Length: 193
Ligand SMILES: C[S@@+](CC[C@H](N)C(=O)[O-])C[C@H]1O[C@@H](n2cnc3c(N)ncnc32)[C@H](O)[C@@H]1O
Image (cartoon, rainbow, N blue to C red; front, side, top):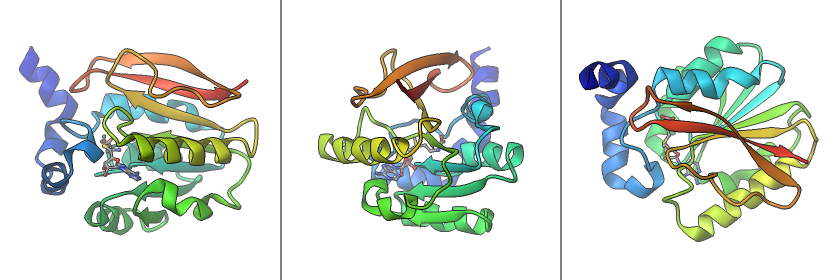
């Protein structure tokens, strides 16, 4: 049973050499044992349908990107990925997307001019990133979310508590737990109050 859970959740991605290389060089920035399963990717892409643009932060090997592109082909797509090698692969696989290599918070200019109906989808490992990076990343996210009340962030985490302390004017809503992922993960939404 464990084998089948593992097989269904991540075996296709776990063999990815690029993921392994990046994990070995910077495990704290990856913060995961394996790319997201298709069940988790489906859950992350669920609420995206009414948005004109999607910003995916920490796109990695594209486990979530793949579902976003399949389910929402018309939406403008901006992908942020820290690792240059993974970003180059994403640009090759998704020529219609705008792919930004490097830390999200250092590239906030790219977020200017996005439509009001923009949704943020993040797989950033907030529990293992350095505190200074978390603070700058949360600031950048909050600033861009405040542009329009309809904007929100979808984020998953492996831990039972919210991914990070909500900035002023926001609250977390826990949506669901995906057991068919290694490890199981919860999907959260950061919304404006
Ligand atoms: C948990 S992995 C998720 C990968 C993929 N989205 C998935 O769900 O399988 C986190 C990804 O975030 C990237 N990352 C970490 N810090 C980042 C930052 N400050 N800016 C952009 N990407 C970052 C890492 O390089 C890694 O690929």
